[in-house]
Image 1 (cartoon, rainbow, N blue to C red):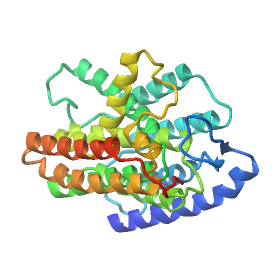
Image 2: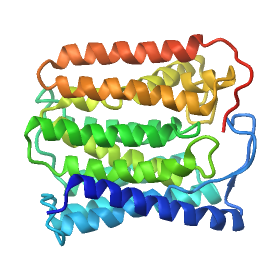
Image 3: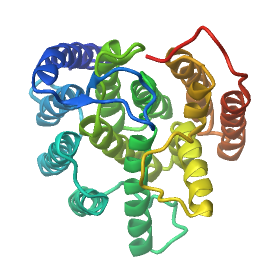
Image 4: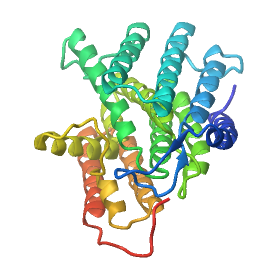
Length: 340
């Protein structure tokens, strides 16, 4: 039986190799993220690099799900096919968006369709909202929350390394939480697969970044992580499912709320997230992403303990995120540091 460590390192190596291969090819075809007034970088960088880790994940899902290596993952073939099909469609659409651009309405429609398709084919273990809602409303709320997570993950991919750090933390956190809970689930194995692929990409995305995920990476990664977190909630570990992504959830939601109150177009690019404010004051990309990584270590620990004390875990997680947001918000203007 393949071990979680083997899954992690094979995924990491595959993702790293594919990402390194993509850099010169994206340069050659001029698939570049050119700096503008809303950018957090100063020089053109290849984008669309998310094709590397997403390819590694899809290949890994096929290997794990078909059981050819005796992985013990319990996903049935139709579930695997549905999830992979949705991820591939989202990656393809998003890569086209990186190159040519498509309307926000079309992006959102495809995301809702992909999530609804998977929800129709792949049943959750139980209610996402722990029986608070009738079945139809639970499913509808899960669909909306899932699509929101896809977009917030995309919104938060704004400085070197931050999306890779979050992918690594959520993926490993999912595996540890599931393993320590004693549950039998594919969530832990897939979490390790996603985490390893995220780390492989991070080698080339750490400041100064040689390549960006682009929508081709952030959208399907958000989709996969959202599905895993919903599966975790459906298994009864709802507090852990909220705690693991709590920084991304809080920063993006508060920023959207502030922009909506002002009447701003919430779908447009901007530089108002807490981490972006820190960069604007001179904090380096590496320092921002490292701070997120440290906070995530605490969040993983709290997610583990939340199985026994969910409310206390959420409160403590909120305190960790509050400190991080305050650190970003109150950081004094600095000199001598520059983003990647």
